[in-house]
Structure formats: structure tokens, C-alpha cells
Image (cartoon, rainbow, N blue to C red; front, top):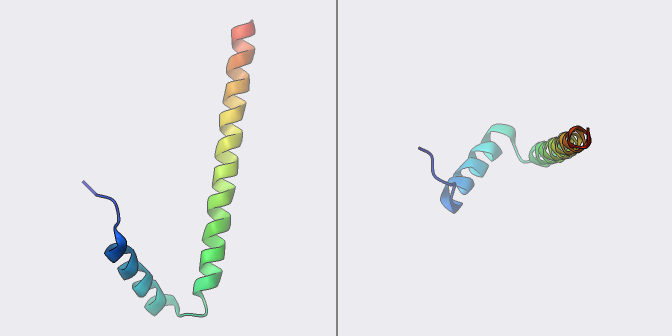
Length: 61
């Protein structure tokens, strides 16, 4: 249904964000989003690793 976002779409989204939040808030928002994505990735990797360990433990029994 939705295709990938291209350059024109990303530029439009950034322009709207600039108008809504202003230039002084955008770096803070970007930093917060980056931290959230990084935390999500680390937790997803941890869950994946826990599942692998549990599966290995069950296969040994």
C-alpha cells in the first residue's frame, strides 16, 4: 500500500517539522529520537539473544 519514502517526501516532512517545531527545537528532537531508536535496538538484540539462549538450553535437555 505504501511505497518507500523518496527524497521529495523527506524534504517535505523536514520542512513541516521545521515550521511546526522551529529551528531551535529540531536538534533536541533529533537527539531524543536517536536515543530512542538506539535503546529500542539494544533491547531488541537483548530479547533476541535471550530467545537463542533459551532455545539452546531446551535443545540440550
